[in-house]
Length: 595
Image 1 (cartoon, one colour):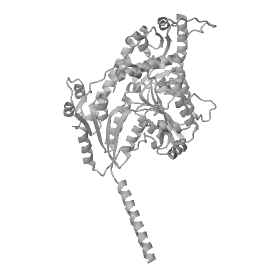
Image 2 (cartoon, one colour; image 1 turned 90 degrees about the horizontal axis):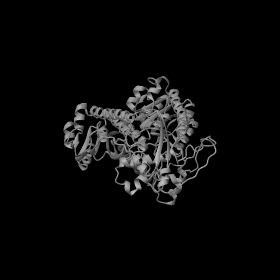
Image 3 (cartoon, one colour; image 1 turned 45 degrees about the vertical axis):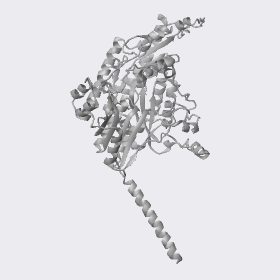
Image 4 (cartoon, helix red, strand yellow; image 1 turned 90 degrees about the vertical axis):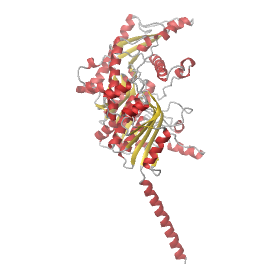
């Protein structure tokens, strides 16, 4: 009797385990529909600038999205992706890479569903590869071409009694014009016109190619007096007009209720750990310093984002040096999204890249939306440079600036008295502009920087340059497509292509790439080690975070400005801050276009 009872229990356990395995097997066979409902700015580095009281989530990066879409294309269980990027702040280069990822998904015979309530330039380009590009019936249609508008602050500075004294090396080196002119120079207007033409042609050609339309048809829509959602549907720019509720219903009817509608497919947990008790805090403290990079054979991906200064490059340099000392790191991919900045800081970061390259491991650069001037300087040593067609790059030249405050001090009734020992000791005083003799000294110093800049490029690029470097330099700015033709970049492509190339050269899988330092939520940052890890270095750069200027967003008089204008005001303030510490800048002019 006892043996019968034991046998019954055993059979019950086998039955239950069989059911569990069956359930597991059934789940593993379920079709996956990867859902991407993305909002907010998409970071390159993932560094959260908000501090403990900023956004609670860990910033989502372009690396996260591009890697996830690539894995979806290779995953046999993924039958479709569903995308709503309407609330995401994507830059043109990011849009171009994501659109290419969607094209790869279609080539892998996956369905791509894209929903939007606004047909903007960026959404037209992003949704073009989809086979279910859905627009809200009463959508706002702003697919009307490219518009560039730059602000000039000389008049405002004049009213404040302030002056920015600027010296250029290179006729086309127009960075800083917004601080001392009221309109663009002839050279600036010339190169901005060429860039705008190139970007406009890219927009038309890429949308037309994906939607199997002629460029004339797309341009006619752009120039239509009353473009509408219905007109977009009739032309074939979109596939259907639906409200969001109907769109969601159509997706579920296509793949069934049993499909796995995965809203975090191959994406990190951006909301970080859940804290319910003190033990969760303790667990987080112990887990925070676990180094994912300890696994054998990986590709280190490091992002340089924003203006170049000592503070912004310090964490980037630290990671590159650590990777150069880690034998398990088989290749480095540097993602550059920067208009440049301090010449000195640019050279410091360039030296770190050469330290990695000296280890004879592949060093590859992926250019983001902009990688110009100092952003190009730090890229020059790469074995291979990838850029999107819409990347802004080049701007090989030097600009020197000094902020002069005497007029402002006069308005405030402030007087000064100065003394000096040494003929040129007061050259950088803010109480007066450069004298002719001082300006010549600054120019000579800038010429040395310019010569070094060009040498970095000739040493790095060699015979890949198409023509004499001086004719390509002089501050001239190019799109990625133009840069390819003259040998400033090697290949059109995004971060995924750069990683794949590095992996091929290193002889490892592209799936082994790691974005470093790993982005953290503010809560996770609290429990990570605050002691800087300098590797084998005895001394290292300060890792103080770059302060975010909140003046433009907080000042009541500026709240009436649009977001693009606020960004330009903020950029101007940061330039004024930067030139106080580094008067020689490798800074590119910015063509202010909203995708």
